Amino acid sequence: MRDGTGCTFGAARAASELGLKRNEFDLAVYLGAVRARSGPDGRPRIDHEEIERLRAQDGFPGALRERVRTVGTAEGAQLLGISPVRFTRLARAGCLTPVAFYLNRYRAVVWVYLAQELEALASRSPELLVGNSPPWMRGRLDAGADWRPRNWRSRRIERLLALTDDPWVRAAIVAQALDPVQLAEVVDDPYERAHFARVRPEAVFGRRGSVAGREAMDRLMPADEPDEILWRRISLITELDAAREARPAPRPGGGARDGLGDAVGGAFSGPADRVQPRGPGGAALPGEPAGPGPEPAEPGAGLPEAGPGLAELGPGLPAPGRGLPGPGFAASVPGSVPVGHTRLGGSPGLLARLRGRAARGLGLRRPRRGGLARAVRPGGRRRAGGRIGAYAGRGDEPGPGGRPGRGGAGRSG
Image (tube, rainbow, N blue to C red):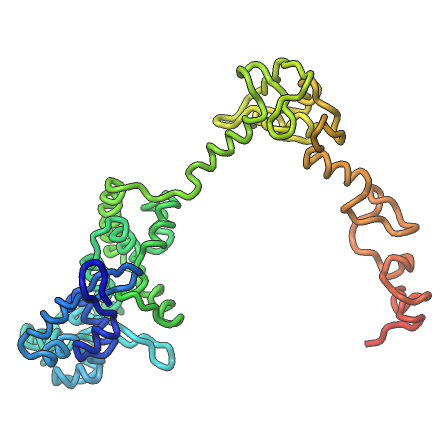
């Protein structure tokens, strides 16, 4: 594929050109061994020059494959010449940092490690592989500590931060290490938290794993130690300040409030102390003189004092002082008509039509024939010994318990 900058390859084609399996190629991009960039469609692309650079390295492709080789507990213990139990103790104490994990058939987390890092540990700290464990390791393990998730989180966050320069993406990556409660304490703006969820990279190379894998990722990403939580909060504040200086987070419906104010205030014209009723479409009613408008007792801050068609709504509106006129507004505006009537050339308001339907009994449960009126009908479930018409039976005689049966016979079963 050729785009505006030259020939590029997709992930599958690039992995084939480099002689790597797909999971090995994803890990190579994650570790920075293969440089990738985002294509026009949002998917990662590999430049032809990058493929040629890797091919020109010494020991290709064995050296590149060895760089991304991973091992589990059993193979790692064999590589170091120790028992799997000692290998697990080293990993739990924080001496080894997992590079990834997968779920076995029982959906248990299985950590994997880079083979090169294990060899580096054997050459750097051989005393950890033989003899008794140091006191600090014994104390950490006796306290039940497990540093594998913590080390994996640190590696993942550092690698993801190295793959992007966008300030909001960087802040979203750091925010993954905090649970929702901690995140809400640091970022009190809900629009910024929602923006984190949109720009946060879900996978290193754009591939979404299984549902169980994503659930395990959600469980392992939040920090659980007090010192780590404090460090992540400080890091998020730093990244968030940089993101806010670059640009603000997008807010949906930025002009909705202005549009609402125009719609509410569009039914009135003239100075603030004079109200002109208008008809459909905002046209002035013929022969309607302008009169003084009502003054609410305590108008709400930032809310309009009146809206279109409020004069015809009548009683039942919120009390004055919350940005809406009181019950006496209909009588104080010249040209207004009583509730339930239609203005000249217009239609009744929504609440007026609903009140009219309620007055005529439409849209409500109609009282059954012979029953009490709705206003005086007793509440609660009717007893079995009530009148026959209280139940929707189809027979002429009541069934068992005072209920009518089907065809004159009581219902069995």
